[in-house]
Length: 297
Image (cartoon, rainbow, N blue to C red; front, side):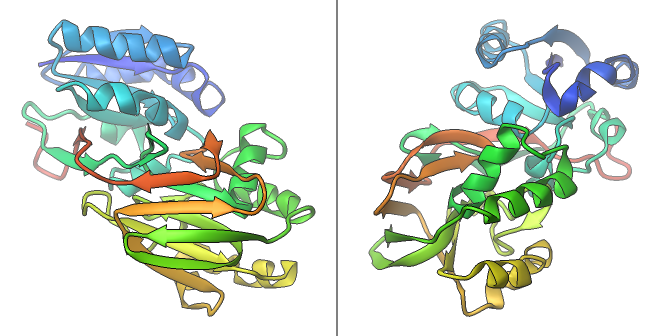
């Protein structure tokens, strides 16, 4: 089989570039033909994916992080290519959400006939995302992380951004629709989850499944800074959902409007501003499943 290996040299502060010699070595042991290309910009990556599809490659391997995957989603979903993930980012939440190890060497074992999963591809205002879309406090944290104001990778960096965002954050009013259900109130944040994890391993939606055809919505109602700090550790275990300040919903079509301007982030990237329509429908894409013992051939 033929695979295009796409290297994002900016991912994980250059981790994929530093690991390139090892990636070549590990992949050379697999029974496939690999072509390597480096794509410094999202447009170059999308062009490379489209070209691979036109040249009848069987799949692509993305060496990057959540942002790399996010930028590839639309082009991948419009092709027949399967996608493998070589996690080289700072958070690697998509890798967690699809159940693959956060270990490059393990993910460089591509079986002769790899098992493939088909996963959901939701969208916000028509823009696809992979893991979690967020509005409010966690979107502010995402903006700080994107701008690298205190963010140095993974969970520790995310926590620093949380503390910075707390200084200026104010709750806001929303009108929310989830399928036929409507709700309005004052909130800290709203997260629309396709998968369980975001923020470098935080379990924002413990029951979310990336292939169940539904979105899990986590609403954190108005809370003080001290309450946010007190309940924050529970996100790592998913126990925050038991707080009276948290409401969990599930649906296929979600509408969100606010009384102030609010940004929407997903997969660590800025998408748009409210109002927003989130939906999960027929768009999907194919992912190479994690290798299990005995499946290497």
